[in-house]
Image (cartoon, rainbow, N blue to C red):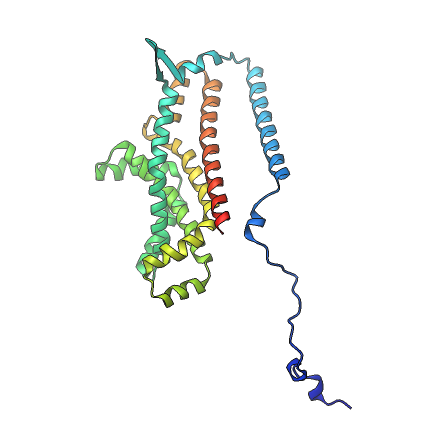
Length: 294
């Protein structure tokens, strides 16, 4: 009969190549998982348009039930007005320019603050990690409006900075704290073998993050990072609390003077939506660019 050694011998003892058991998982290219079918994208756009129309219908129905007198003919004067044959920006467009200026300056500053805090949290310094976590938790767990008021009335007065600069710095620190956690998560998602390979090549910490870690983490952090930047654009309306004449402040002034509440606020919402949709499209293009490079 057969001995126990026969049953428990390895496949190599019979000169039979060993084949691992088949697994149920198959390797799929990441871009195949991120690209939705065209019919699904069209269905989502159709649903978005229907929802927007339903929302506008509810607003119009509510205004009619209040017997609100619509004055849409006066709205273009607050966008552009003509004097002696020359076209000038109206109050709403002037506020829009200020909002774009604030976002253009606060966005790169928020990304820099987020990257700095993320690297500080990943550092080997206990003091640096503690300070970074304290700043992040303090900013993320307090309202932006209170931060804006404290920054303007206390910190800006001590540092002798302007009202506009205080609003930009406050927005940058607020959104930068969220960027820090997103960037830190993206860096931690890079395999440890990449760090070990960087050490084997003798790369410095700067070159390691610049050439190896950050390029691999960027496709992962770009979608949530885009959401934070869109929030920065919407949160820029909080600078109206410190009397910066952005789009929201200009709209509030016009409503208090003309009582055209529905027309002005709907126009203001449309301008904000135009900016956010443009930014979303730009971020989507960047995602596609990195997916093609992957």
